[in-house]
Image (cartoon, rainbow, N blue to C red; front, side, top):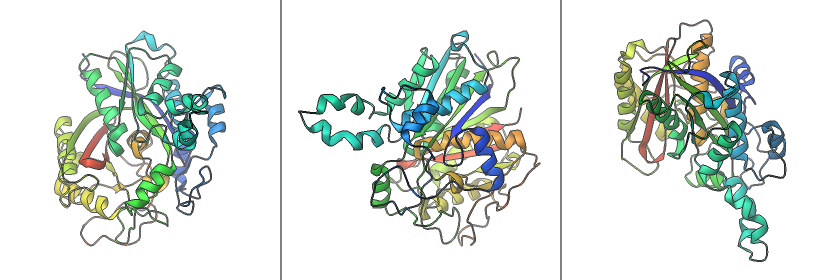
Length: 399
């Protein structure tokens, strides 16, 4: 059994970059990836989104898969990020240690299903489209990633809405600490689809302008797509290699308040943050930076902000939402933001909260507005809060 869990590899693809290096460059330059939708035909094409700047066919080339084999966009984004994470960790043989993969997703292969379901229902054509429909369920992408990486010891898929990939990382850490696994590729992947565009539009929480988390005049979120994975390793498996950070705290809680809305008091978020700090045995004042869930919706930012003030009081550490860069990538956001959190530790960075102008009346703090470099970043708290009140916090530490 391993008392400690280290991060040794990072992989990410989103609207701000097709790999970790490109993502870091965009974060340093303050360049948002949110813009015009190009790869989906929809009546909501005027809504700004954080779209990955490649067609699905181009993603197949980047992922190194055969163009003849059916793959949803969700599969491909996950493949690209997971492959990068494993390569970054310097792992050539996944069988050297007991290795698992845990991937989070919210909509699975919906982007492919919605293109083929009418033909599938046509009995004269359904057989031709069966393989496309098979990619619909969330676990399909996990299986494809595992096959690509050669991982056979353990596979799991988590779908808890927007906390999915944070919960994948949390579970991976617990399996390593219990001695069940030595190494876990953990994170998540989600692609844009008409289904999600229409769904969030029905909820009336899409912003027709660039999202502005924690702003008094915030109007909603910008959807995004992408994937983010980290390689978690035990003390034994990570011996002799670069340990980028340590996962020292985590917690998953539920406020059981509403199917989609967070509680006004931020009860679930408050419990997740508090339990995370308790597990890590650190004080609120020890936290260097908070990578907030920060969706830009009226309800989330007030609920999360209230929870943060309940925990940190008048001494809220620097805080920002990187969703102003990537858009809200749903089940992938926790994985992508875990990568950003580790980069913040490694490079001494505190990211800016883009587009913010006006102080929220209900809160005393305001987010960090300019990139801070050469900062002493020892502990980063990353929040991911999903529908149904499923709230998760992760705490990363400098090694």
